[in-house]
Length: 499
Image 1 (cartoon, helix red, strand yellow):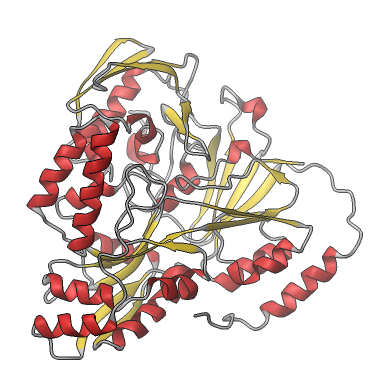
Image 2 (image 1 turned 30 degrees about the vertical axis):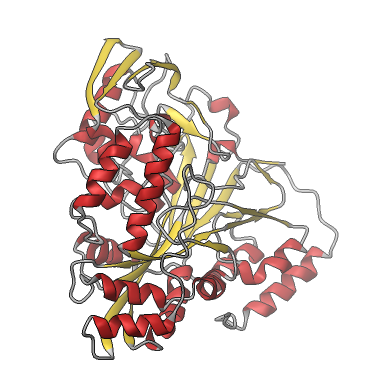
């Protein structure tokens, strides 16, 4: 189920680019700048203070650094920590910190900064979306300036990965209050300018310990949400690299053009129709099951992601530890959907609103989902909102019935146990089960419990789970160091260079 491209003029631009590709290429001098594009603009530049993944796309490993680093193949390697040891029960983690590291403002990076950062993340006033990770820390010892010992309440086999995510950045205590707009970290880049609504520019920080290895002196990150404009910006050369671009409909043309490289990679993301579980009649599981039964996942993948996705039946994706196929729990069945609405006492049409953020997959997917819901007697009125409105109204104030969003963090299943999370799910059964998961370090038993958790949230239809997206990156053919797979959203600028 596909739609014609929204702007007919893109065909002319594409034809011109293909013609240019057939002309002899002129030798070009080696560049030390680049333009990278993103779909969404972040609300701020402190990833510990907001849920938007766009914050990490700009700042993680560029402005801020973490103890560990996650690679494109999902491994964790040292970053600010040069190494570590762990007790057999996975409760005591001793990190040896790199020496000679400083923050952008000249302050030294040391164990005290690690202690401050993690205690701040666990603080009662913390808005860190991974607060539970740090609340599991019983205490932090700093026997010397270059050693930090984390004593956990429960052993955590995922800790090294979690400490490589954006919510685990090490911040400088004296400057932390200004990180939303004037971020200070230990990374290879500093903020040069933020042109609100248009772009962010980062410049190489020559005080970084590995500054000589950083090839790009300046990187401008532009914000382009419209799919046609994304493609046009690449074809015109205004943008050098567009990770996670909405270019599926132009993919063959890019692949045939020697001026471009195309990378198609996997992810741990989950695209869902989020449901406000406390709004009537959505607080009735029969209504939520009716919504799920009305949706043909494969048709949504074709309509919203142009075929680039894998159906999922829960908030977990193929390839993740302990994954089980739950797509059969709530299969596509319009007749069942109508019957469930009748059982719930709903007289059609059921009037709901569906608030959609500006991402192409959400806007396109919303139209497909709304058409499917209409066939079973649910009138989902679409309201397109800007990203800031979605973050404040839907995510913050829970002022919505339905929305479509992709959760991109790989280890966020614990959101179902978060009190007052935006989908308003409150289950004592899940909370008990999740506590068991957190207290279990045996891999086989942990995977068994994760299977139970997947089945439970599928049965409760906290959301209508749609698909695991496949991400597309299109870039100038001469750029090197690009990520293919996306275990988390990050643009690793220090790895990039021109051929």
